[in-house]
Image (cartoon, rainbow, N blue to C red; front, side, top):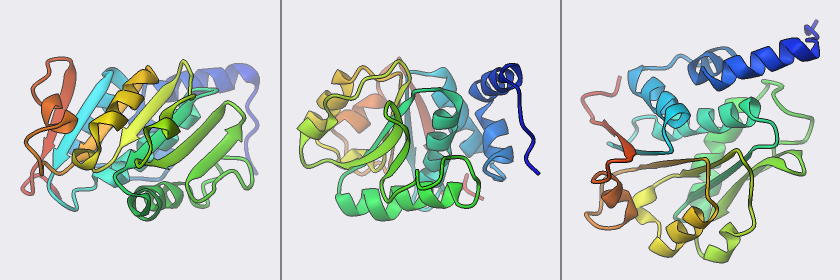
Length: 204
């Protein structure tokens, strides 16, 4: 039988989760995290912008899915906007991980989780957008707005301009370092961006 929390307990639990994404991932999602996954989660908690460059199959998209759920469950009336270079990557890679991460976890109201959306309330949701039109990124406003960009080296600069126009609370960029120019490459030269590198030798 589920424990029923009183309002003070819920507030205390929420504040605890806000300050400890690893606690949320391990307990609410049932995950065992390795060092780099923990580093990414803590970076999103503590830094405005986090850029993660990695080898293939390092678990970065898996980690991003956990961060999406942590954000939604930590901050009331929060919004998460996620994107990748193509609609297929949004649907079949990033959002496949997001859906699997919360499968049978009872984190959300019934029927809240859709193919590329999680709808908790009218102003409390996550959404997956492909990047063919910058106009798609307009009109989303929240004091707790997270933007997750997967395969960030393939994103056009006009999309990043639209993302910056949202004035997000946090930005997470993930990708393989396949280009020497563009926003993703430039992030690794900026002082205010927290930079994380995952090599093939790091991954368990």
